[in-house]
Amino acid sequence: MGSVRRSTIPAVLYLLLAVTDGLDVCPTDDISFEKATKIGFHRLFQYIQGANLNSTRLRMTTPVLTSIVPDAGPLGSSAYFVRFYLQVQFQASPPVPLPELDLHSDKWPSRCVAVRQFSGYARDRNVIKEAEKLAISLSKSPWANSTEFDGENAYSIAQYNSPFRIIGRVNEVWVDINCESSVGRDVY
Picture (spheres, rainbow, N blue to C red):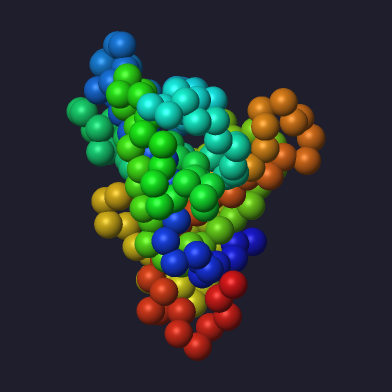
């Protein structure tokens, strides 16, 4: 079952990597969720390990968030944005990533999201199914007509665990919803 959460942080600074089909070595192949997340996470991991102009090492944070925008890439392929939360002490002045990483910061405003939690590994075969399950739950809820798809993200997959954790994995699918339509409803 899905839930709705109101962000308690006014603005969150994420490090963003845009991975699209156009950046792939073979542009005729549509890049997958798994491949985009792997490429994006690798670049972000290099950054936190010191691949920045100060050689500053940062602590790993969760979740790693991959946002999916269907049909936004070349020839109708999907675009992916891979992010993770930048620690509070670095938000005012984040270490500048090395240029070859092609990273930039992305400040997210406060938002409301509908969330569906799922276990196991987030894979190409299950992330779309989980997003569809959340869409079905939303369609039967008071938020049925409140999804916010502004072309930025159709939905996002939040992954909270190391890839080495095999059991007890926690993932979520997030969909932005209009907070205005939540007036008078319980929002967490």
